[in-house]
Image (cartoon, rainbow, N blue to C red; front, side):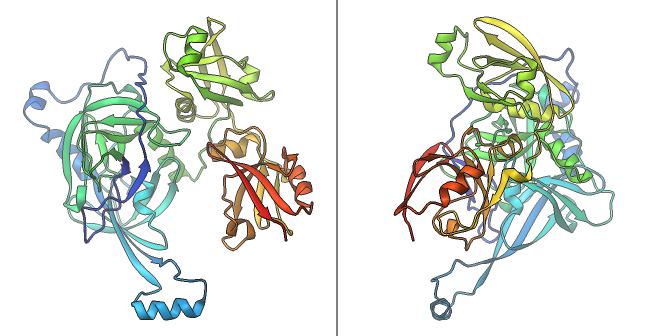
Length: 477
């Protein structure tokens, strides 16, 4: 079981907060070798003690305390029953939820990076950070992103503060020594040592832009948001999850690479939104059968299944059937690894794709640019006597599909809805892609609106939710 190592309750610090699901371990993703590696402390010193590195890095790692008031779930929809049972059982309408994690100060002005799941407890939260020298300060969230699980805080206090610098996570190699610094189980700052066990694990989450560093340095609940540092004392990753069956460390921990974390820190400080470059192609993983049919040496890479005629991929010459095996010299394990490479490269740059096309190696240079902005005609607020009343929907244009991580080519996606809307009460969710209503195939919002104006005896709706195709039947009227 893969768990986020956060939200250790302050009173019972041995609980683990959340499960991400079953882990399917990915394959090794190694970057090109550098001509010269950065040198760490003298070898003799490292043989006997990590203390010089710890003294340099530990002051920049903080404990993050979150305390928030959240609403208890309703006991009934009837206000009288809610009040009666609440008084009878002694249950207040609100309860206090506390949690504890770690963070890393990355600037002398008090900018702290941690995990979103550490600071997002719901309701109105009060956040405090405790430095290694036991000073405590209030902090505010200035950016949080659930897909990447990265949050950025600002300490409300006078600096300068001790801080850590980022190192280039792309120069890491399997076998490199690292230290994990954080606050496991709420017992106080702790340092563990280990090595890089693997690189570019993409199966840890469903994010289309996320890859993880795997380490055997002990990471436990409460370590979330802490620092993974190299032998120069610089941050190469932010610890975020562990693979465990018991809630404790089994030597399989995961950290978000520093190169991705830096993008979010820069975005938080500058106020500029992070944009994911638009490729304009649908990518799929390479199966063993496909690799054999195409004569590939390895079961890895990303298959180009379709290409948008106006997208950067088509303009650069990428074709359906191509198998992308490298991006900017880095081997591609699967289709999710490409999103990470493009995002860390950044809009305005050019990436070189090495592809296998009909048994031949071909190089394709693709200009990285933003997806076209959706027009007003691409979005609708639905209302009327139908199951999707109260839902806001949109066409599957690149800017929206990239933002939501949707690979579907046909249908209309639900963006949002009020909790009290008919669509929400019937079980529809943001991210659902409506592909058919009755016998009408849905290809845009205009088609959907027309189909919903019908008055059938039974509403029959086909939608895609993640990798599942659902057929919904609801009585009309």
